[in-house]
Image 1: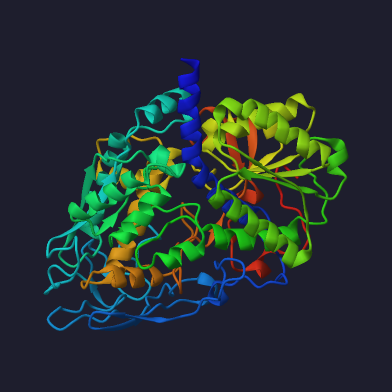
Image 2: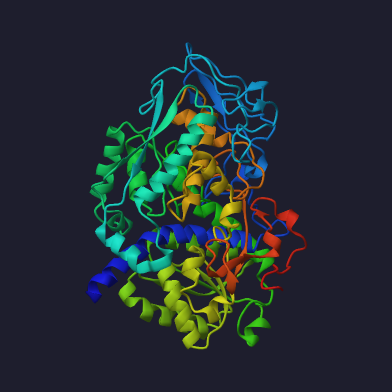
Length: 571
């Protein structure tokens, strides 16, 4: 029984690593956003988001049915202007062109449309309004699209081992696929009534897969991912929205979707070049590893390198300039993300990584690996541990460090408040993290208020229901921007044409050339073990640093003097 439990936990740990390595590089951006432009410019319009050594990006025109539509946007990934100035997409002969975004008229949601007005009044993430559409939408403009519907598939998980592992994970475990789907469909129903889909509505088709998502994350049983992508295609999918707390949207599955011509919006922990290689079929609402990693490396150079490790638990470290250590799983994708950070540090300011350690994701060895990592970091004199880790080894590593009287700064990935409560609190008293750690109280969250609009007499079923809302926001914004002539090429232009939003629950979003993800900024938080959490009311909470300030990724000049410490833990 003990061996079986270990196998269960090992598999779920493997499952979460891609999300967490992606969260790490995003975290580093918001921790150390530079105050002056580093030696290597990181601007989206000139290549931010490219892999190191890659070509720079630029505005390009993409041919679509009936004409061309350029990816418009402000420099630095700011997206199209909020005034509704994105370029209208051409439509083929016989399809009725919609009114221009921001033109006079009344939307399906009842909003009086005009310049800069959003499609719905309850979120800054809505696209610029379009007066209610009447006319010929072209019917079946692509596979999965009819005159009435747009089919979106959802792949369920298929592992009794994963379910058992979630039951062991306790308060940090997500709910069931049924719970998540219930919340997602609530948002889809509301968005179908209020967003402009040109006579169509989104239909979610979930299915039971052949593949084992846990095995796929280990590079095994890839035939299952391919069979499931073919199943999505056979179900008539235009796109797939399997990104959920259960994380059924593995990288092999996303790659297989692209191979069969189905759009996926669930890829995480992958580089910009991966998205480009799978265009126009792959997108994400989470910052890609290249964009975040390059920005993080440059930011570390200007806001951390050469400054004292004032957040450490050891008084000696507090008076020493930071000495970085880097921890990441040994899988190739995770190591590629770590490479980007390390190489950017070296190129931008010559900052070294004093100790870099990889580890195998094997829960039966986590206690030993945690002890070994802590010992190596301590022996190398690392003041600041950058941990791109899975949630379980954070627990054993923190406990091992505490046992070895090793008390550095911790810059960690977050698995929300419940997971942080399981770590050594003596260590996490000195831990800082980034998105998605910080949430307002549930009743104040936009995701909750909109859910109550959709289901006034119900409550969200999945405690991580915010993810379903974010998923729906991104999907429907792209669909509206794509216009009536919906196909993979116009969907891509709809993504690139996303207008820059105001600041909302997920920070600021925007489109722009090669903007396969919309994230433009993020927050920073420190761990307070005694504060009741806004997330769920239980003691132990990630608390916003600097008053909850959001930091843009692409505007380093806006963050004050160079080489100034961030303000966390009351410092």
